Image 1 (cartoon, rainbow, N blue to C red):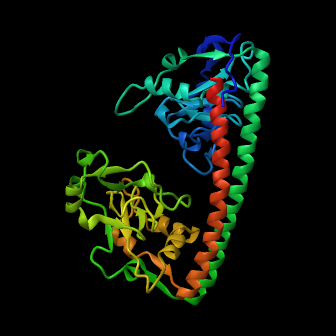
Image 2 (image 1 turned 180 degrees about the vertical axis):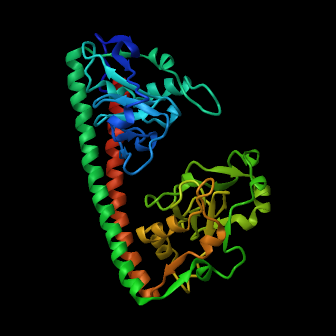
Image 3 (image 1 turned 90 degrees about the horizontal axis):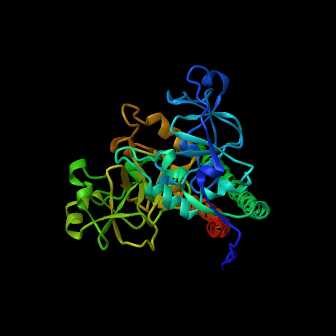
Length: 400
């Protein structure tokens, strides 16, 4: 539904007429004046909110972090703008030299409205089109400063800002509910694990693996699978880190790359099927996936950065092992066994020796049943969040 068909009286402006670039660099004193810093990883895609803040008490400050940002400024990372990360600074702090710190010219525009412009489809397209560099894709201020859009009269801006912030507030409330349910799930997992651990029985991934050939395997050697092997659909999908989460969706069935059926035959030993557990070996460690029984494809290839295991269901339920690998207890063990030389990683030997507490199949069934009920509740709440986000996104795109 179009809400803003009539834009008479709206004025076409450039971004640099509405937003001012502030450069407050202090190589010598920034780290002494501020403990808090913001990395791109702290920013959430398509949201003005940060997922967290870094502190020098907990993490070493990167050498390029000497730019000071102020509360209320718009933080726009010029590197990888296609990631759609722009946030409002909730406090004063430090950010990287490649992050733009912007302020709205309040004589021209409402500071509460303009931040949403950075999450409009039109601005995404413009900033993505301004990217230069293949090794280190980025855009320059001058290339986004010339972005043009229709700016409503000042009195309308205030009303539109109220509308968008009301939607944003609703999203944050619903996300809070999701996080609360998720915390309940984590607490329940830990509660069950404590009780199960007292029973004392543990088995390794290798011991829990099916007796079939290549039941527990890693991805191909580097030269056996390269980007040159990728083809358009149809083909056999390759599971990468983008298909796994740290407790979100069990298995993300999109953003696949594919290899031909012929190529997949040479990678037969690196195959994964429905019911298999897939875990990240390098990259975002701690990601775990469980291929569902109704997955889009009957067969997948595991990339070089993942490993998979087919569980012997006479010993354990794949869902139980999946939930355990996502538990805080398992994630702490993963941190201990991670090889930190070079890119942090684990290998297949470490994965095979990963210890799993194994209660009776009846107990496993009961634990899985309770956790699945919570997952269903989380799923419904997350769908509600997504619906509200879609509504807000539609409003933003109609305005800008």
